[in-house]
Length: 145
Image 1 (cartoon, helix red, strand yellow):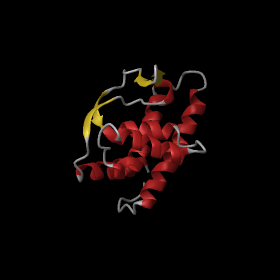
Image 2 (cartoon, rainbow, N blue to C red):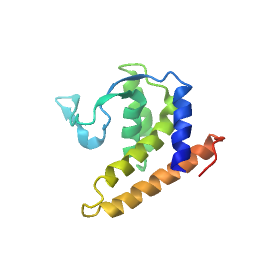
Image 3 (tube, one colour):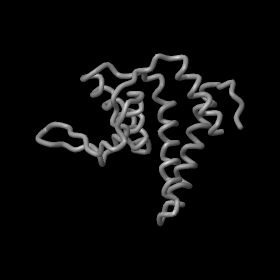
Image 4 (tube, helix red, strand yellow):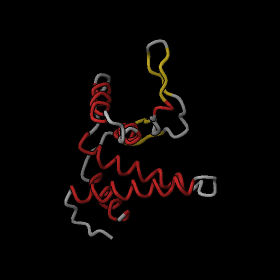
């Protein structure tokens, strides 16, 4: 299945001229601070050049299970659009799947740490469900492996 989503993503990104540039790549709540009425970001160790939609996907994935997720999603996109044109939002669901897969890789590097096996199980299940759903919704011609 993960090979299928990788191939699907590769084909989708080849077919588009997606917006790339400098990204934070880890915009989760813990890395966003409010200071004197303005938003500040911290923890830039993952930043680099990449798809701008990845930043939105990272933030949204971290909040996907919140009861008010649709409101949070809409507010994030509206706020982003108030500063710069949003990236290709059609790619957002795919990038949320891809972001879920990065957590699997992150956990794999730390699997010997206490409690990481349980975390890995959760990360794998979330990535598996999201990948299967995305492939099914997009009627991918790539065979599920």
